Image 1 (tube, rainbow, N blue to C red):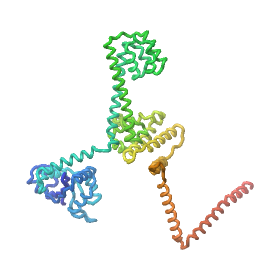
Image 2 (cartoon, rainbow, N blue to C red):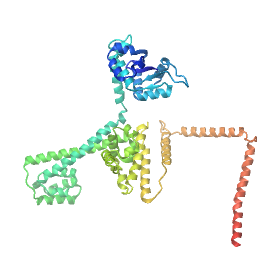
Image 3 (tube, rainbow, N blue to C red):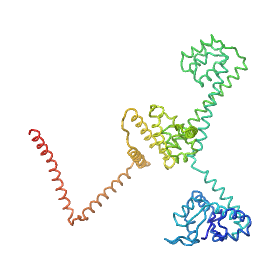
Image 4 (tube, rainbow, N blue to C red):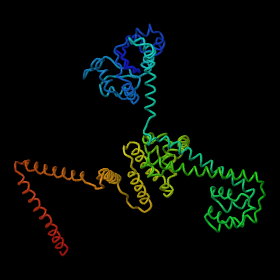
Amino acid sequence: MTLYVLYESASGYGLFSADGIDEIGQNTEAVRSSVVDLNRFGKVVKLAAFTPYDSALDALNQCNAISEGQMTDELRNFLELTLPKVKEGKKPKFSLGVGEPKLGSHIFEVTKIPCQSNEFVLELIRGIRLHFVRFIENLKPGDLEKAQLGLGHSYSRAKVKFNVNRVDNMVIQAIFLLDTLDKDVNSFSMRVREWYSWHFPELVKIVNDNYLYAKVAKYIEDKAQLSEDKLSGLTDIVGDEDKAKEIIEAAKASMGQDLSPIDLINVKQFAQRVMDLAEYRKKLYDYLVAKMNDIAPNLAALIGEVVGARLISHAGSLTNLAKCPSSTLQILGAEKALFRALKTHGNTPKYGLIFHSSFIGRASARNKGRMARYLANKCSIASRLDCFLETSTSAFGEKLREQVEERLDFYDKGVAPRKNIDVMKSVIDTVESKEDEPMATENGDSHEVPKSEKKKKKKEKRKQQEDEDQEMPDVNGGDVEDGTAKKKKKKSKDKDSEDTPVATDGKKKKKSRA
């Protein structure tokens, strides 16, 4: 059996024939030793055909198709012209060696050319790659390197370049930074509390919020100088006049020690840093909400911006999250607990990052697992809609959220929820109606041309159907009038059937009297 090897280079497709395979016996070690020596390798492998790419863009398209395991039309034409034809009902006397198994399976499905991909074929491809320049005539020394460099740059650029408004990498970085800021703000706020408590320990019990505490500490500075004059400023910060008076009274009878002016300046500067970090955290959260509404509006509407961003970050991208089944999405973030349970033969976790959703907290302890499974199902649908829809809309996410609310009511009160197919149909109708809304003219007047056209088309279809019904004869040879007569007979039968229950009721009454 003859073996052909397909090699995809940066300059074109090459088809090589490997002779003497039976003598070698497909021994990988023998091929590996003969790869380095061109004299030995050239006796076994010879160039059968070569077709160059038309342009750099064509080379990029071919490279993208091969990386996805797809056969292009150019590759199919090249293989069908150069390889022997496969006859139906007979075993082919050749096989094609391919480096990518997915590409080989696709070639076999389309052209019925038998393909193989194993260590032996990979060693042959390695040798072809090593001596490729020697096989191709009229190829200058630097041409192949230039083609490889250009194709590598264009392929990498195409992989990195996406729609700027829908780059999920920004969401991943933002949620990482948001989590880091939460930890930093909490630790720095505790440091401010501990530091300023040496001077004013009573303030900790009065002001509980970290941001407010830093703001009040910066405003008060030295407790000895706190008087009734600063009451209005304290009220503006705290938001409660009674609490501001309580702070002033506590400062008068405070048990804290006095601090030097340099120490107070350092405490004030550090409190300002904590306030800046907290304000930046708020801005970053607003940025994350805006990005999530652009990238994954349905997922954000269903489960929230922060939880949705954490799911995308943990999966690696929105595309990876869309590829995950709902069972994987349900325990995303609980991998350690899952593998621990599998190792110890214990109970597997019911939820991961999805636990932070408010729906899981609202469900009863008995229904938390069921709720997590249902919510993961809806999140999987929402992520796929966000990933593959061309137009950005949050209508699907809002309806999915309503379905989750109905499921909660079903678990608590027993109210039957709507079917998913009915909900999705209603959403699709609303989205299509919004797209088909009449566009306003320049003068501000709206015209309903699409609706009138739809009505005309419906009327035309009805007329065509009526004409066809009039022209079509009956199966038994009669015309349409016979069909109307049959309908009348059916109506009379229906009337008789309606009268029969009365008679049966009369018989029952007679039997009961007897």
